[in-house]
Length: 333
Length: 229
Image (cartoon, rainbow over all chains, first blue to last red; front, side, top):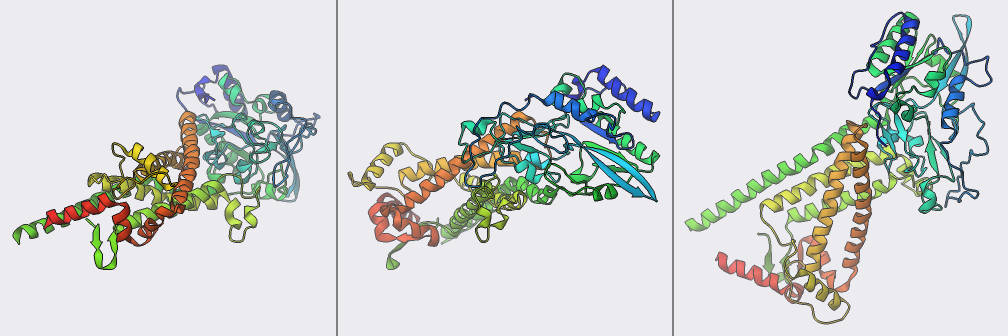
């Protein structure tokens, strides 16, 4: 799958983004995107999101579901029973669920009732994949079925995914969701290897390639979500946080992400309203990227060929010298 | 040259200490890589490996990665050292020679009771082929592993074509490494090869065995000794 370059996003889309940002903040982002491979980032402004309380389903969810409704092929009638652990995850008969992440629902909105300084506040938090800067879900996928594109979108290729759910295990928010009974594993060893396909938000990567906006961003009636070049979005998040004396989530969490939440209420308080459940991630501030601990060791692995060559050179020189001395001694005798 | 006949002890020195260290460093780190490589697949929970005493950590992919990296450090450094050091010294004893293929067939047939073994050098002809095969597998694992490690640390958005190529080379050669390991064990299980096993632990094999099976090698050692005097 070719990674779409940011430059492919149409001028019109970016003008739309820019206009939205400018209108809301009184500042302007660059009107054109620099050619090249600048990473995209999204900003979710919780001071603007009202959870679309006047609608049956929040606009971001409806739009996302509409775009992705044909993503999962028909699930086989008889899903093979995995051996020996018999876990089957079948959401095909519960496709209508919108209050959590499922293979058929890549975004949901958490409602948080928070009391701060004696004032009751309701905050709505759209939750989906954070598209991390260095996502373990992608880097250690055993088949590289999950990959971070140059534009920042972390995308699972359903044709290569075996549904082992490793990506979900290593994600601090356990975002990817499995649908059993679909995918390549059915054609290999369905009872012994794999268990379906993992699904999650792909930042509407195909739409980005066509120069369109992600569905959730485009559909948000209050422009609570915006997308743009990472640096510009980070600057925008800082500005908004400063203006509302608020907080940012996603900048340093899991080593940095391409999704920045800006909130007038602290994320510690928001997190207290969340109980981590399957498909309903929490929002623990400063959650660490676990792979960061392995990086120093990984760097020494990268240096290992040089270490090997240096040792071979040193020992080679030493043994040759020893042989020379021996020969000289014999010649002298 | 380490090779030396110790007639009074009925032994002949087959491997230097350095060679023994190289072999066991590659063997132990290779086995660790094999197991932690398997644990990088989502199998530990599914196959209840986590319930095996002492393997409770096996479903934690990050813990496995720590061990995988530590083993890869040894595996890569020693593998490159081996190639460079013995390559610079021009040691060709384990490189296949003309006629090795036909000789390998003869040796294989003799192992199953058909015909006589031809007189052999220090290494058997099929051992030389096996060595080149294993060295190639190890080299491919090292190169693809280095690309994957670089991606993990510095470039998660590396070109998908490169990532997929490195991943599948790593996966395919992981399977080949496992098969090569099994073949190595199978070779050890064959009775005529038993006397060589002590050599890879102690560096020495029985002289009567070497005279009988590695006649060309023993003749070579004697020739070198004579020319040195």
